[in-house]
Image 1 (tube, helix red, strand yellow):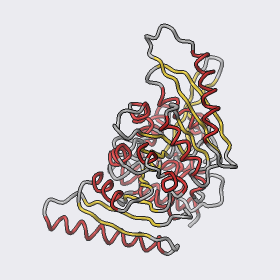
Image 2: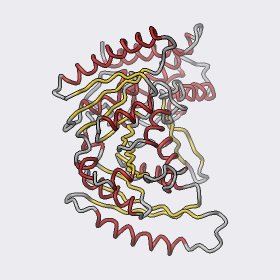
Image 3: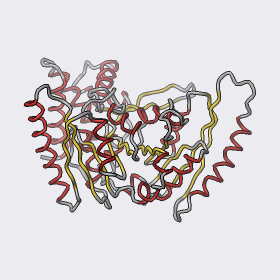
Image 4: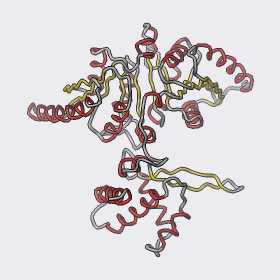
Length: 414
């Protein structure tokens, strides 16, 4: 079976499960659309590109019908759409048109292709931490984050970002002068990074209140960074500028891997442990969901992990018998995963615990004195499509260890 047949078979199986019975023609049409996107996966396609190709088989197909089907494909699953839709501005009047591509996850998951420029390649620590964006408010805590990231192995480039925000009712405001002053401060902050071979770039923006998170995400996309590193003050989980709505916005709706560091961890003199040796002891909560399985590829291809603790928290079951059955099932599954990872020589410790996921993750992280908690942004239950699941959100917002949020969409792109 060649790549296209393999892809075709798996796509039809997925569509059949998700489309009501009696809709066979819909399945055929949607499969044909996805096959076109698969064959032309390196191209940007519009409705006008797709219509002529489909017209021979569906001669009564209108542009509206095709558009509706593409929109349906773009929201097929809660966790991951089939089709990625972007927008392109055309013409002098600035009109926009939709650009369609098959989501990379389905190329890598449903096909066996490995030798194309759009195929999945191995993920390693050097790639994840290769180019890091660090938003800073120039506090001593933010400087600790900059110092920490500068010590992480594999970092090649760092983008220091400062975003000034002002209320809409501010009467006297000279953004040009403020930006000039901020750029001077950023130039001084660059000196904190003393590791050789790291290029440092500075970016400064002045925006209205409520726009900071959007700017952080925009800069992450423009700079094509592989990681955003942000800090959180230790006394209170809501004191920092980046721990209010800005932090929540980047955490919940960002699309780049995110490293969250509590400032009190850095203040306790743990820069060496949590920065230079950040992969010494990693805790990964595993819920056996498809996103978590995808995230495991990060560990399979990461060199230098001292120990990986795989944790499954059993939180369902109304009776003792049900709980025991769930524990037995989880133990079997996690041991199978441990066996696969151990084949590569990795030290892996399985743990199955009954309790509340967030509390048990935090508790075990303290008990095992881990250097990092790594967690997939989407799991078995997501808050909404494309948004971070509640467990990952709560862990990142409260853990006393650095937390690495692995974005599923970025994992399959590497």
